[in-house]
Image 1 (tube, one colour):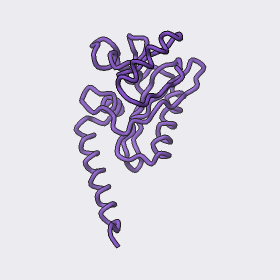
Image 2 (cartoon, one colour):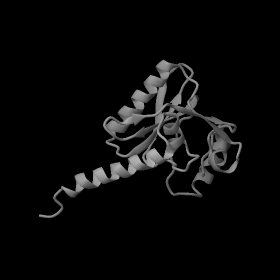
Image 3 (cartoon, helix red, strand yellow):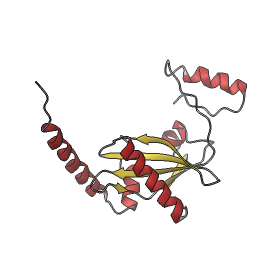
Image 4 (cartoon, one colour):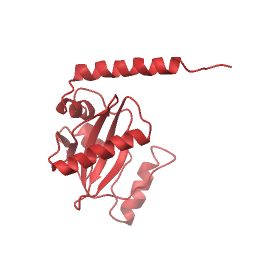
Length: 172
């Protein structure tokens, strides 16, 4: 919502005006041409890193409309059709991103894969969509973790975290 891809100065001004309808602060980012890939992480010992999936967008970019309004706006290609070496690099970067940020439970790490093979982390989503048609559970399902198994694992992780935090001293 309030996001635009800018090609010229008039679009820039219109994009700013539109963005400021939704908030008093906005983010302006450089457009990165490339494939949009996503990788799910499920915490544990060791964490589970899914196969990467790709968002194939029918719009100029993966906008709110493409994602939520236009039923044909985007297709999730799981697993993504990329070579094994790139898959391994993406999975490694996803796991390192999760660990460096001290994330817990579940996360989805989103990437851009440029034509020259450069991998750019776009964001880590620490509370990704979680319906049965969302990317996160679909990525894990393609990696051998069913939706019921995923729910069970997240409940177990919550109890483990509660046990760790319960032992902490909270008063003095």
